[in-house]
Length: 525
Image (cartoon, rainbow, N blue to C red; front, side):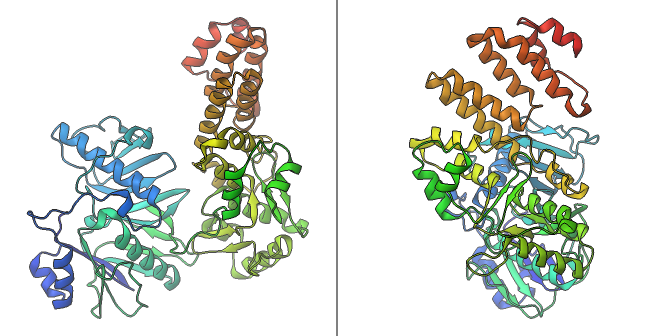
C-alpha cells in the first residue's frame, strides 16, 4: 500500500479505493485537493512519526503496534523476505499477534514465533518486551485500523486489503458506532498518514481531529467488497477476520482511576497494609475486592435473587479495563426488560456518583465502574505504575498487601462471567512483574523477611506459577535451607489443587533435585 490511497466512510458502507490520480479525481476537486495534501513525493517522504507527535486516544497501543511492525519489517529485510499480507492484528497487554491472510514462504522470524496450535503458519506472535528498540521508518501497514476489542484483545483490521468497499450492515446503532470508531482510528493513527479519509452519506458528520483529515462528500460509497455485520446486542462481526468484536467507544473510559488516587499514590510516605489504613489514605464510597474472594462494600443491599448476575457483572467490570463486555451483559440478560431491571437493582445497590449517574453504567463498550468506585485491582495497577521512584517501596508493599487469595477465589461466578475473567490478559504479567521488583528491593534493603513475604503474596494470588516457586526456593537455599523440604511440599500441594495434573517444568525439576527433600517430593509428583 502506497501513499496514493483513499479511505472513505459512509453510513451504509466503508470503502477503500486504491485511488490513483484518476480514482481520486473521480471523487471531485475537494477530494483531489485533500488527497494531494496528504500524499508525499519521493523528494519529500513522510517522516517517521515520533510518539510525541501522535494524536491518538491510546498511545501505548499505538507504540506496541508501530514498534512491533517496524521491527518485523526490519527483520524481514535482513533476510530479503517480503512483508506478509495481514488479515488482522490482535494486541494484548504484553504481546502482539498477527493473523496472516495466507501462509508465508518462510516461517516466523525471531523473535516472532508461530502461535502454538497453528498448523498452517498463519498466526505469528511476539512478546512486546522483545521489540522495544525503536525502528523508525515508513509504516509497514498504513491501512491498519482499530475496529474493537475481543476477549480483552484490541483488534485491528488491515483495510488496505479490502477488495472493494466495506459494507457495515445490520443494527443502525452499533453500525454508527463502528463508523465513528473507524473514522477516529484512521484520522488519529500515526501509521495512517498516507491515507486520505473521505466521509459520505446521510449519517451525522464525525468531527475530525485535524481539519485536513476528513473530507465530507454527499456521494454514497459503491457496493461490494467486505461486510461487517452489526448485531442488536451491540457487537460487530468482522467478516475477513472471522471475529466478533465490541466497537471501540470514542469517549474517555470512566473506569480509569481518579486523579486523587494518583496524587495519593505519589504522596504515599509509608506502606498502607491494612484496610483501616487504606480507607483513611484512599477513602471511597464503594469498594470492590477481586484479589481474593469477591468482597463488595456498598451503601445498599443486593437482592439475593439477583446476586449471582449482578455480582458477575460487577466482578468482571472491576477486573477488565473496558468493563463488563456487552456480550456478557446480553448473555446474562436476554432482553431489554431484564437489562433495565438489572440496571435499577445495581443502582439501588451501589448508588450514584457525585454527578447523579449510576456507579455501574452502560457505555458503548460495556458496563463500567464510575471513578469513585475503588476496585482493588484498579488501585493495585495505579500503585505499581505511578512514576514516583521516591516511594516505590511503599507503593509496591501497599499494592501487594491488597492480595487476599486467588483471583475471585470461592466466588460463584456464572460460567459466562468466569470465562471472561479467565481470558483477562493484563493482570497476571503486571502482578508477577511487581512481585519480582518488590523482592529485588527487599533484597537490596537486606530484609529477608520482606523478600519471603513478597514472594508468598505473589503465590497467594498465583499458586501455580512455578517461576515464583523457583524464586522462593532459591531464596530459601541461601537464607533458610531448613525450610526447603516443607516449601517443596507446599508447592506440590498447590500445583495439585483443584485436581490439576502436576507437570513440573524442567527448571523446577532441576532446582528441586539439587536441594534436600527433593526425592520424596518428586516421587509423590
